[in-house]
Every structure is written in structure tokens, then in C-alpha cells.
Length: 334
Ligand code: NAD
Ligand code: MG
Image (tube, rainbow, N blue to C red; front, top):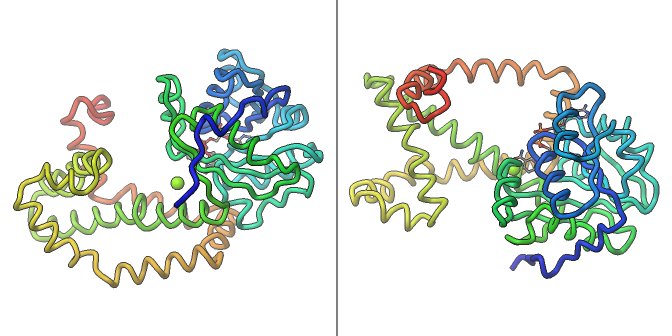
């Protein structure tokens, strides 16, 4: 069983007198900085000169400075800029200030695990990765709770890297929910696998295949959209709240029988074999190399894929159908 830490296992005293520099004020950055500040931790936010977040950070009553200034003046530095720019930001603005005794932190293991960032010996390198987007990390904290997180240690120069990381996790509220111990390898590989095979890649491919099957068979795209896309949220909400049995309790017996007998014909052993192939590409670094190279040449393939996918008929009809639903964003725009 995985080891899980809670507030009682963590002590904010490990952050006392040590300034925390949060680099970036995006989804995770704003949530970490504001939660730590509200937990009584001394926080500064590092931004690039001219960043539109500068005023927002000042208005929230936090210190703000350039990434260089904040990295120089902080003992604990949390990297919360997008993963694909972390290497450059690290090399140009953080590494020059990374004296021995400091702590370098991440919310995702990609750059450490795949060797893009190689911190010097003598610094602690750890991860606190909340298992939710930043707005949730902020909102749940303000309500008195916390979003669960992962903790991992890559380098333990001080022999207290875990205590520092857990204190950080407590500061952003995650100790209230549980902080699960993992490694940079496990977090990185399972995160990539999850987003590729189910959360992002798998689910959108499944929707497109089902939508296309109905439309090609002559059904109205609006009906196809409702059945293969719109209703997904209702089902996912049930799964999220109470698991598969709870979801199946809420649907009709007809739906449940179709689920058991037809689902495994769609997602069969051949799908699992391809999932294993995708996992091997993650494990042996092929995916990471491909994505790093794609970024290095200006992302031509990525940009083309983004455009092609935005033009898919399910997206076109989806905009129209969501316009009927005033409570959705597209509805408000319509
Ligand atoms: P984001 O895109 O929301 O925010 C990035 C921030 O970095 C923005 O404030 C942006 O202005 C700033 N930035 C961009 N380029 C910069 C540069 N060159 N110099 C300085 N600042 C720059 O990113 P995010 O989603 O918060 O991701 C940050 C980290 O958190 C990543 O490692 C990511 O994997 C991890 N993470 C994200 C989530 C999530 O749900 N978003 C969840 C867990 C972990
Ligand atoms: Mg993820």
C-alpha cells in the first residue's frame, strides 16, 4: 500500500524563515502562492518582465519580482511555468542562483525524470503535485479542505527534503486530504500514460469514433452529439462520486446489460495491447524525445493537429448544440 501523509505528519516550521519563491502565476502558480500566503508562509512570485500577472500578484498583497530576483532571494523555489519552457527558464534565470542548501521543487516530474533539468548536487529536489487544476486547489483550500497531492524526492542533500516538501504540501492545503508518496519516475510515467490513453487521448478518440459511426449511418449530427458527447458528463459525475456500481445503479437495466455485453467488444484485448505499446514509448523515452524535438522546431505538427481537431464535425455541431443550453459557456456566448 502507498504511504499517505496528512497534516499531522507535516510541520510548517520547516518553512519558517525560509522564503518560498513560486515561479509562474498560472493555474498552479496562483493557487500555490495564495494558499501558502494564507497559511502564513513568506511567499514571493517570480514572473517575466512585462507579465500581465504582475498587477494581480501585487493586488493580492504578495511580493512579486523577476524570476532572477525571486530565485536569488528564495530558499525554496517552485517551478510552475509550463513544462516545455521550464528548461530554458531554469537555465537562464534559476540555475545561476541555486546555491547549495536551497530546495528546487516541481509539480510534475517530466523535466527531472527525462533529464532536461539537471540540478547541482547540494540542493534538495522534490515534488508536490496536486491532483487537480489550480482553481480547485485554491477554492477547496478557501473552503477549509484540500486537494490530494503526490510527494516525491529526487535529491535529498539536506536529509530533510521530505519534511520540507510535506510542509509545502500542508501549506497549500493538501495535507488536509492526503499526500501520497511516489517517485518522479512513477508520477511522470503514469501521468503521461493517463492523459494519452484515457483522460485526453482515449476519451476524445472514443467520442469521435462513436459520433462518426452514427452520422455516417445517417443519423442527425445533433442526436449523435447528445448521445455520444453531451451525456458523458452525467455518467462521469456518477463514476466520480460513487464508482462503477453507483453509476450502474443509476442507469436503466437495459443500459447496464449493454454496458457489460458490448463495452468489452469495443475496448478489447487489442486496445490493451496498444496501451502497453504506448506505455513502453513513455518508459523508454521515445515520447519525451518526440515532444522535446517538436518543441525545438517550433511545433509545426502540434499546431496542425490542433487546427485539424478543432475543425472536426463533432466540434462544429457541439458549438451549436451547446448554444441551446444557456447554463454553458457556449450558451452564454450565443
Ligand atoms: P500555466 O500554463 O497555467 O501557467 C504557467 C505560468 O507561467 C503563467 O503564469 C505564464 O505566464 C508563466 N510563464 C510562461 N512562460 C514563462 C516564461 N518564459 N518565464 C516566466 N513565466 C512564464 O501552467 P500550469 O498548468 O500551472 O503548470 C505549471 C506546472 O504545474 C507544470 O509543471 C504542470 O505539469 C504542473 N501541473 C499542472 C496541473 C494543472 O491541472 N494545470 C496539475 C498538476 C501539475
Ligand atoms: Mg496529469
